[in-house]
Length: 182
Picture 1 (cartoon, helix red, strand yellow):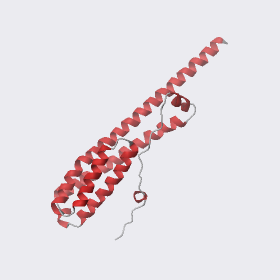
Picture 2: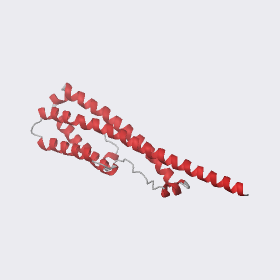
Picture 3: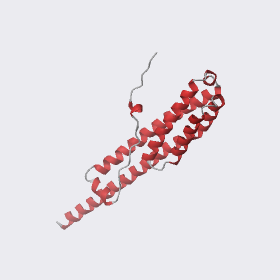
Picture 4: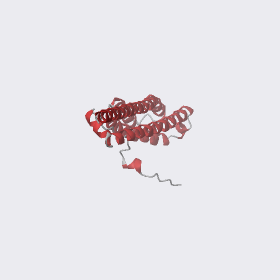
């Protein structure tokens, strides 16, 4: 009977260690996924000044638009939390939409090879950011499920693991289906 009790205690301890190791692994994957988003965002931040300068050459009287893009870029670069990054990215996306709206007013700019190249590069980076966000949210989902599930929630609570935030769209406009009119 004593051996059975000792064996049971050993199994429970190893099971707890296994859960703890899964929590550590998923926590690391969440951090790695966030790093992937960060890398893509930095690529975009580095591209934005070139884009602004190209548009500036054609639309020098749109000073407020350029200042808004620069301000939004700086805020996004200095964000330190997932929630802060979300808010800053939403503001940056709005500013970039305004920048492209300005570019639409200048047909010679839209035909400029440098502008087209920068626009294509930005499109590729945006696609990579979307993939990184999906990966981050997937690993965050798995991590949060483990934290919420019994009995791993007991181990998570004892070892101070906390849920991670999802990287989501904040604005209703981005959630709407786009309307295409010809």
